[in-house]
Image (tube, one colour):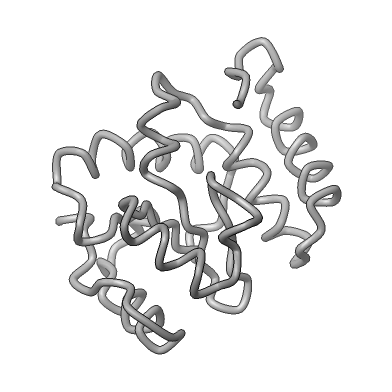
Length: 154
C-alpha cells in the first residue's frame, strides 16, 4: 500500500484533517506528502517506522514526512517556522511532522533522539521542550538505546 497521501497541505486545519483521513487504513503510522516520490518516501519512512516500534510508540498516532515545500507550509500554518527545522507535533490532531530534508541529511539512521523527543511531547501532552526531552531520554534508556548508539544531532 502506498505511503504517499493523496492531499497536499495548502491551508487550514480542515485540509490537515482530510490529509489524515486519506492515510492507509492498516497500522502504517508513517506516511509522506504527495510531493515526495515513492522511493524516497520508503527510504525514509521504513527506518522511522522501525524506530517507532523500537520505542514502543502508540499505533494511533500519525507521523508525516513532509517535502521541503510542504514543510514550509506546515510550519507557517502551525506557527512553528521559527521554532524548529526538524520535527514538530500537533497534539490536537495526533500528528507529528518530520522534515524530509533533515532526514535525508542525517542518514544513516537512526535518528532516535528526534523521535524520542517528539514522543516525549505526546506522552506529556505538553509543549514543554524540557519535559519532552526528559521523557524522551527516559524512553531511550527504557528501550536500551545507549547514547553511544545514537548519532549526534546538528
